[in-house]
Amino acid sequence: MTKATLDEVTVRRRFGPREVIFRERDKASEAFIIESGRVEISTDVGSERKVLAILGPGEMFGEMAALDGTERSATAVALQDTELTLIVHEQLRSRVEAAEPILRLLLRVILNRFRHEQSLFRHVGNGGLETVDMAEAESSKLAIDKIKLESELRGALARRELEVYYQPIVRLSEGVTIGFEALLRWRHPELGNIPPEKFIGLAEETALIVPIGRSVLSRACRDLVSFQERLGREVLMSVNVSGRQFAEPSFLSELKTVIDETRVNPRSLKLEITEGVLMDHRSRPLGWIEGCKKLGASIALDDFGTGFSSLSYLASFPIDTLKIDRSFVRAMGLDPRSLKIVRAINQLAHGIGLDVVAEGIEEEFQRRELLLMGCELGQGFLFSEAVPFEQAVNQASSIAGA
Ligand code: C2E
Ligand code: CA
Ligand code: CA
Image (tube, rainbow, N blue to C red; front, side, top):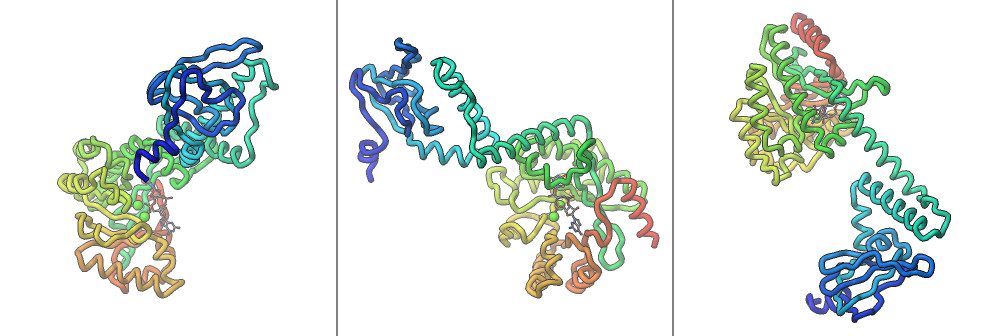
């Protein structure tokens, strides 16, 4: 269909002087944008007609009723030859449904309030706020929980309730700790420990991950220096970095500042990123990765095998380490194909000169199998979960001395 016919058939509509576009109480299905001309919006209060607005080109009207699909709250009349673009209910509805839950909730609250005020203004109806159906109520509750959690998270950051724990990364052959992964913990005064799954996603959505990630990075670097002093040897520190942090223009300069201030050896620092970061071309990942490497830090690709795992990433980006996701390690004993996949990942990684770290090793046979396929490094509950700094130091010194 050409543009002209599309305009004529569905999108544009013309009205002459004093022609009614819609009347108060009409069932609503669309909103309008004025292309040319003028439109008067009015409402009846008792026997009187009250003009609410005179609108001109570029302005929108009829959107409230079109949003909730109820009746018109006012009458719209063209004051002169007027051309309007139609926005059908479906266009609005599909966007509202696709919107972020908190925005949807806000919209619903605003619409409810609008209808409520209107009924007071006209002295009609019972004036009560509309009730929402159960499905809506459920999504409202989720949205409210989410917004509360976000406020709490902001408070947690300010009150320093976020702590960094350390999970040892060990040499699988003898169990010696060669490094640690820094993992965030939220020690909530009433709710107890809240696991990262419950708040990292939210932190990423709201960009709170930027100050949170910054504090994890500087804490982990300071602790890395202390680990090396206390253990009397070099160890590595792996820090998770989310895409949002990479996308900050100041990321590299902040990384440099942390390295300088903590006087950490950047060669001992490894940044863990996921495939999602590599796929987001807008944040130009190659530039960031090369910048980190220039500063001396290395890069690990986290959760390998769970995302899109395109082998082209391995060729296009200067990655140093692959971390095999724990779902593969878990499945190794359950199905022979997973075992073969893990073996193939190891061969591939070693073939192109990458280190491999297996995640989520819980059982002795997994450690043995991984060693047989040439995977030298791993982490998992078989060795230790993530623990506070002091405990991590004690464990690492006792295992090293064993
Ligand atoms: P991840 O980066 O894949 O971290 C490994 C997760 O596996 C950790 O969960 C760790 O406790 C858990 N794990 C380690 N060994 C085992 C095992 O043997 N069995 C099982 N079942 N689990 C094991 P955790 O600490 O709950 O962290 C979850 C995720 O939260 C992390 O997954 C990471 O994606 C994210 N995260 C944690 N800290 C940070 C942070 O500082 N920044 C960012 N951006 N993300 C973080
Ligand atoms: Ca990780
Ligand atoms: Ca992982």
